[in-house]
Each structure stands twice: as structure tokens, then as C-alpha cells.
Length: 456
Ligand code: CTP
Image (cartoon, protein in one colour):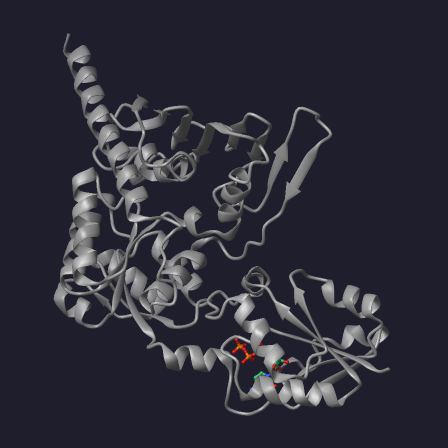
């Protein structure tokens, strides 16, 4: 019996897929079809599949050509499968010509002519209007956003806005994008959605203006400095029927979702404590270090350390205590936040002028999870128990610098593909804004105390 194997994503099943499977079957007597998991596709750069894996498998099954359907979820699996199933022919479409020649040492490799003029990408782009996005603020993060957005299909960065002419010009010179410096309304007219990466104190204002103009908003953290402001913005988004997402990139990383799921699976028992730390020694002249009103450690990294607490223990915290060490400028170079829940507690440590071990530790009654730096991109974590040799290692897939997942989520939400919000809900974001509000108040109090001490 001649066994043939082929692999694919089969998103939005189309004629090209059908014809390929038909011809693949004709190459032998028994056809095995490997359908790729979403994670594996993400690792290969396809970040916005529409159909869930069960639908994609079902569509392959319905063709009647596959004798067996398997799931492809890791690099190097093709060789394993060929050996395991005793495969005689490996086949894929001609868009892959040459790519799989290395498999010739195991079996025949056949590249079948690709059906012209059709692809899942094209259908995705056609079904959903390309989202035109404009960037507000052209500082450090904007170029990263631009390069990561290229990996997400269905979205196009069209223009930018920055009232500071120097920064606008520098960005335009680097990227060739039109940058508006004065006419914010004209900028908004050009786009369907905005990504806000301007200085912290302008986030709320821009988000509000963009939502009011009927634009979807992806806003860098913090979206707001107070709970009420945050609530109002989410309410406005709902009224306008627009997507509002806070760009806490960790929330959208596949590995972080996996970590939270593992923590909640019961493996470590009841979860009692979360300790999260994120520090980076920033340039002493940077806004984070110098701007005592809207810079500082907490506004920079607080969202990251609050995220695992809020995800695991919820939004109903009982008590919050915040301690900060201020620099000469009165800015918090280091902040610790303690959050108390009914039967759990959490600590977050953040620094722009103090360096510490960037761990995330989730402690439970049966064991703990240790995610070392950079846990906020969640590429690796361990589940540990009393027995020091009992360690389960997780290495979630991760590509790019972390932003493409949130861009993909944003695009899919705009297109209504992912209607259910669970990665970072409005309630979770609002609860985080509540802690940010306490931090802001605390820092002003500390600054006042410091001034009074200096005066005496
Ligand atoms: N295929 C084909 N003809 C097409 C499209 C795909 O023969 N017009 C083949 C591919 O070469 C591959 C299989 O179908 O062997 C599954 O391809 P997949 O990557 O799932 O489909 P694409 O439409 O190419 O997806 P995308 O646009 O996301 O790359």
C-alpha cells in the first residue's frame, strides 16, 4: 500500500485545498493529512487564522480524500510522521517547491501545481476589509509597531500623527509614511483605527477623541490614570460599537494564556500568592526617569505585574498598598504594590532605576509556577513541586517581539472574528486602572512629603 502524506492549514477551505487533496490522494492508496494547530501557525508567522482547528479538520474530512487526519503542532514533526507511518510520498503545493527537498532521504517528495488565484490569505483579506490604522505618537514604540504589523494580514498602517514636528519628520524620513503634525481630524479621516503610542498623559484624550470619531482604539498602557476615566472610555467604546483594547502585550501572548490555564488547572492546588517583577534600567535622561508627573516605573511596567494578579485572583481586591522610592526629580524609580484578596495575596515590583530578578512566581497549595524573565513574553515556564526533581517544563511558541499577537487580536476583533473578549476584559482593565489611580495619588503624597522635608 502506497502511503501519501500532506500538510496544511486549510483555513477558510477553498478550491485550491480541495484540488490539492484530490491529487494527493491520487498519488497513492492511503492519504494522511496533517492539519496545523493555531500555535504552530503562529510560530510560522500566520497570526490570524479565522477557522478554529476543529472546523479546519472537519472541512478536510468532508472532502472524503483523507484516510487519516493528524495534527501538526511542532517543528520537525514531518520527519517523525514519515517514519512513524511508513510514508512513501510527501506532497505539498508548488508554492513550497524546494522547501522540503531535505525529506527526500526518507521518501519521495512531490510538489503539486498550486491552483492559481486563490489562497486563504486572499479570502481573509477579501472577506474582511483591510483595516487602515494610524499611529498616534512617533516615538520609540511606533517603529516596532510598524514592523510587527507587517506580519498580520488584514491590516495596513497608513499614516501617523505627532504634533511635534521634529519627531514627525524623523519618523517620516525613516518610514515614508505620511505624518500629520497639525490636522488631527484629517488624520482620523484617513483611518479606521488608531494605535496610541504618545506620551502617557495624552492617552485618555486621544482615545476619547478617536472613539468619538468612530475609530477603533488600541492604546498603550496606561489607557487612563483613574478608574472612572477607564470606565468612561470602555462605556464610550461600547456605545460607539468600537473596539477598545489596552496594549498590555503579555495578555495577548499565547504562552501567557497557557501559563494562566496551567495555573488554574489544579496542578499547583489552590493559588495563594503571585509575585511578579519587571525592571529595566532606563536611560537616565528618558521620560520614564525624568518625568515625575507621568513617567516612572509603575506607569511603565505596572500593567505587566498587575496582569497575572488580576487574571488569577480577579478584579475584586480587598486592599492595595503601594510603596515607591523616588529619585531627585520626584519620580518613582522603584515601586512595590501589595494586593490583598479574600484568601490570596499578590506583590508586584517594578523599576526603571533599580534592577531585580524579573521572575513571575505563582504559589499554590500543591506546588508553584516559576516563569523567569522575560515572563512577560512567556517563552518558558516550569511547574515545580515539593520533590525538587519533579519539574514540568513548558516552552510555548513565541515569535517576533510580542506585539504582533495584540495587533492580530485587535484586527480580528474589529472584523468580529473574535467576539468574545477574554484575554483582557474591560473589567480587568478597569480594575488595573483602579490600582494605577492609587499609585498616582500615593506618588503625589510622597512628593509633597519629600518637599516638606526638604523645606524643613
Ligand atoms: N494550495 C494549493 N493551491 C492554492 C492554495 C493552496 O494547491 N491555491 C495548497 C498548498 O500548497 C498546501 C495546501 O494547499 O499544500 C494547504 O495550504 P494552506 O497553506 O493551508 O493554504 P493557503 O491558501 O496557501 O493559505 P495561506 O494563504 O494562509 O498561505
